Image 1: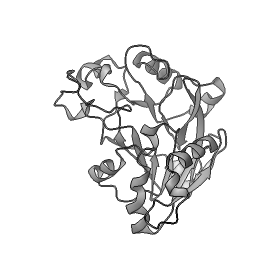
Image 2 (image 1 turned 90 degrees about the vertical axis):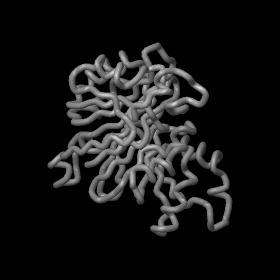
Image 3 (image 1 turned 180 degrees about the vertical axis):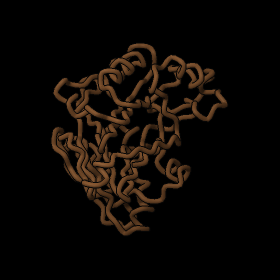
Image 4 (image 1 turned 30 degrees about the horizontal axis):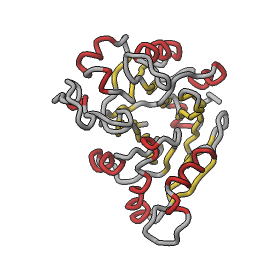
Length: 267
């Protein structure tokens, strides 16, 4: 399994337009963050988690030419705003893009991109909406995926577990019943917005505490704000085996049981 961080920033990205802070003016490439998204390459398929407004540039920058399916965590525009840019993939591979989301999110996408669904014009994106539910495993090709319900303030959204990898963004809290799906992880990706308390996102301190409770072998923090501080000044604050993710970071991990049998045993 190969995970590519396409974007690791908040809805404004870093640098923020017009901001003069030292993070937004940083020359360190690790401090330049597009809107949050990741690509999971497994069993010959590229599975995209969220499709940000920066999707087109993210794929060009990473050299990824094909996406086989999209998993949507929730309907906020920084997580779905790049949907129109799947058209070259539709055209080149002559495929409708499978998009996995709960019904509420599907309804929001239908409203936000109504021209996709109510138009016979051949140039619009081609999307195949697939309904998913919390606590119910679904398949992307031969790959099992477990959706995990998390809370983004009062909004229930989804994280996803694939093998021994889990991706949780925009978390503020997780119900105890959902924590069972996060046992035995090799890699956890978790949001950490900033140091100051926020109503809908984990602070760095809260994210560290939650990561310790989950107990993954390695944790990467994403969805970072410029108010977090620079990578150079923030990473020394992190416990062992916890890191700040950054754009274009690539992680490779192996789960022999998953690769050989197509099952992970965490359901």
